[in-house]
Image (cartoon, one colour):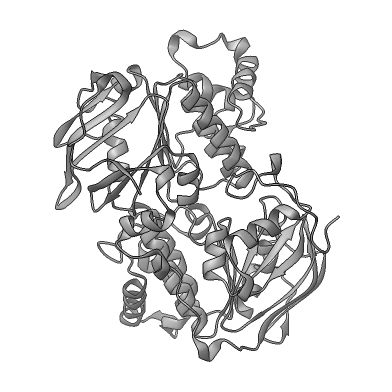
Length: 534
């Protein structure tokens, strides 16, 4: 691992080659020091990644760079020009653009109008030319976005919204582009498309600041990587000379080998708790598999191969067309989520903001909303018992919140996900369906969630985990089922599990992603089909 620019501002100044430069930046919010004497720069024609846990200062750094947050100390320059405090309009005029994690789209407005409003005033087309202009721009960005310019932005999928947010930022033809968690809702194909666009920006001399929790993607696309921890710069490193394990240790202060806790030996041999036989539904099937108590089974496969529909069906959100599902000896009709939860099958959704949480309500309500009967007597809520149970889960999962009543919408992504996990734990189901359980979660929170999931299964729960991260599947799961074209094409046992084995199974199946790329966006050689493939 080669350190190119140490933290703390000791690097020589070179304004000519730097499109963005922050020097000695500090920012405090109340009693919390978000950043302390941080220096950072991005050069023309490079991708400079910023990694760190939630709360490490990444969002504050981007806020200061874009003019939305005032630093207490320090300076910002864009293209060699000083940025006035609290001036996002000046940052934009100097050539800075930003694609936001939660998107800045006006959802009721058509795609063409969102692009129109993002464009510089002098380059906005006449009203009757907006549709043709929007089509031309979207094609130029090479993001595989096949959007209808007249369609409201709110009709787009989460993945298309995230890619469209990047397209909207590129309308300004920026000198420096800030990407805040640009791949949280993207599958392998979309990530590959985004990375092609980032590479094109790099070749045109645009400086790209790439903030992400997905370290394999960071190592693939970045030229340099800056690590933040507790608001301090831990150093800037050459991406090509840095490993994922080294980054993890810098980010959290723990070795990478400690990320995935092992199963407890006493639950290694469990009983069948879920039996799925010939299940068919929209976009998947027939599939057959079993889950045993105490095990974590992974679902791997390129996006668009029926994984979300399978999870929705098992959770009672989408009725099956055929097949049999038995949980704890009871056959399920899967006609409603109420029936599934009552039978002991509970979903941990991937989209926590829209499907799992009530952002304006506190952690207490979000955790206990499906378990209130547990704390009620004759219709009256036993508040002490409720608070005691929630407090125990908050401590177990290390949820960082000022109080149990703090609206969860104000918590970090990692803490929001822990609240979602805590709800499933409180219900104590027989089977947990965890769909992308660490999506958009920082490395430190991932460790906490892995530990919590394994602790839950060690107590006898069975878990089905869908993840787009082969490293996560290899480290967390006891075995992995690979899906392609809606069917399970291969089962990888625990003694064969590793990242390469999972990726090979995915790309050799009939559901090969676009351009023959792996889930990490890396071009893979052709290989013969596995059993069950064409």
